[in-house]
Amino acid sequence: MHPLVTVIVPGRDVGVFAAAAVASLRAQSEPRWRALLIDDGSVDDTRAVFAAAADSDPRFEVLHHVEARGLGAARNLGLDRVDTPFVGFLDADDELTPHALALWLGTLEESGSDFVVGAYVRSRADADGTYLPGRVQPWVARATSPRRLGVALAEHPDASANIVAWSKLSRTPMWDGLRFPENVAYEDQIVAQRMYTQARAFDVIPDIVVHWRLRADGTSITQGKARLPVLHDYLTALRGGIRVLHEAGQRAAVVARLNLILAMDLPPLRRIAAEHPDPAYAAALEGFEAELRTLPEFADARPDPALAAALAW
Image (cartoon, rainbow, N blue to C red; front, side, top):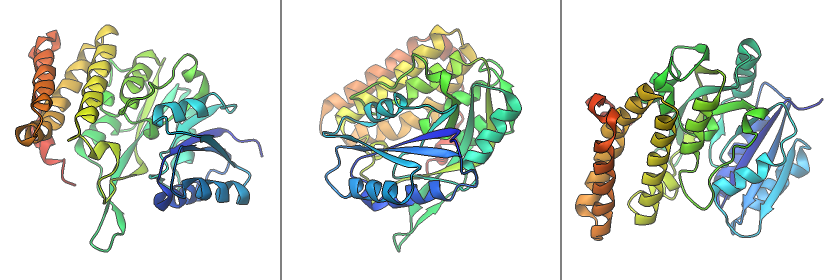
């Protein structure tokens, strides 16, 4: 059975979670996939988990970085090996829902679009350490609901809020000349905006396709914004995404991104800055906010205060 989809699965030191990611692939109702499991210089048992998957199922192939190079480089390594009509991503500490590939493929078969974007939920540990999925957050719902086929960003600017690589399935030619930035965090934000602005058309579906794990020990990149280097990468990604939209003439999408940044990204960063021991943290954040105020679209920004409350569940 020839595979239709390549799923690129990068991971570093996620051995405790990687088996669940592998199991979520095996559980797919659509069996026509192959997965590139990319060990990004792990020092735990991630490589062993990946190797066991490949030994038991020929649909898995393991690739390695001897030294850690980051998610961007790991995904790019996988993209260079894709030989299927479609490509998607799954971080090795997350899980696909059982019908994710079938939903994505069925949607693209119906629409003929370049890629499809699905909804996702956070998965958090309870008191017993069991990870449980939450509800679809308001900004995710605005991006993916209701179901829309064959749209352009100008028709649906709220889609620009869905910036994660693993919420999408693309036709492989979408990646001709498109790769992830390397040696930085938040590498998927700029790439997502390029996808939205370069696509002939894309689809959005409200179905939950991924359970995104927020690690109980707080070690994921998105949980490390109090570290100054992570903040710099975060702000660089936000700037870069806005620049892509602005240069493409997508004014409504820039306004949509500003609304979300003002309501959700900046308030927690301001709280961190107020208590951070390094004054460079507050200075970097203040400089970023000053840049936002110079944007011509800033005058139209109307952040929704209700979105800030969604930072809980």
